[in-house]
Image (cartoon, rainbow, N blue to C red; front, top):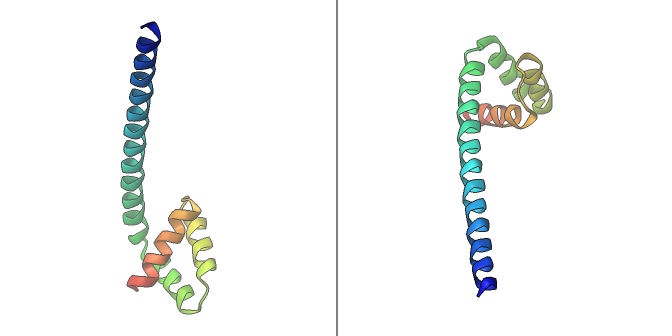
Length: 91
């Protein structure tokens, strides 16, 4: 009987741990998305930089565009690549 109670308690604890872990991951994803939107808004207002990035993209220098973006704005490589990819798609 004691083993059954211990097993049930273990299952409850593990289940709670999984639920809490998933909730934290979802919160983190949401805040990352919100930061990305704010970063995109800030960068998109930098007209001279966007013109320069578009010029580099027309010249086929995508990596240089990503590097230049990261030089001007302190963002991650993934964020810079995503922004340049989007700029390339949308012109």
